[in-house]
Length: 239
Image (tube, rainbow, N blue to C red; front, side, top):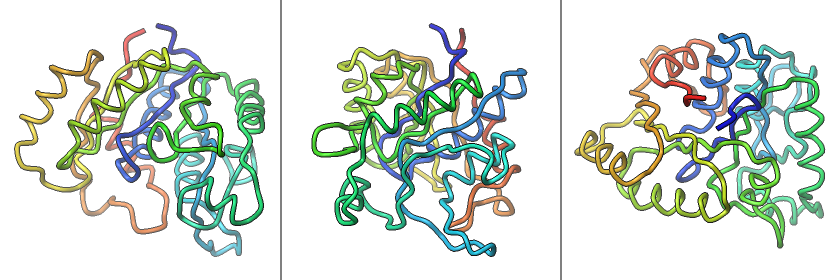
């Protein structure tokens, strides 16, 4: 498995920690001397910054991890203001999200950076438009996939359905990461054990609750301290 070009990070749902994991993996790859940046195909939802700009918290987290200034590189071709399903927000604004545009932005970034950690939007099959979804994009770029499992009731079914779908697209699952979501889950270790038994891919770690002092505020990016904390609890897939 060639992981030198980066990873595609997907999740069992939205809000399961893909951004936290993506930022942490970027840090780990950069620590190994690999020039790595983050990328998102599309984001939906922005917040007003003190500069007057409207920013997206996921993109700003990827910029922090990638050590980039806000206008240094384009990390996302489509930034939508409304926090909802991207293809629906785009349609309401008279915009069509195009797979070709996403691919071009990704390839341009890859040429400049080498290794790219791609963070999906929501789950694996989130629509791009009326014909294509993020699974189609993952197939086009052929990066090893890392699955983030939000540890909550229902996660076993969601994780197994997602892994089955990823494999149906003939993609390599490089591993999976459990994220506690800063909440206590009944039978957490038992749930992880079940997933280890049923997911035929390496378990790359469990991210515990972030300390209160570094937990992310609403509509704000993760801090460098939060990304470093997460990075300490996960490992990179073996080459």
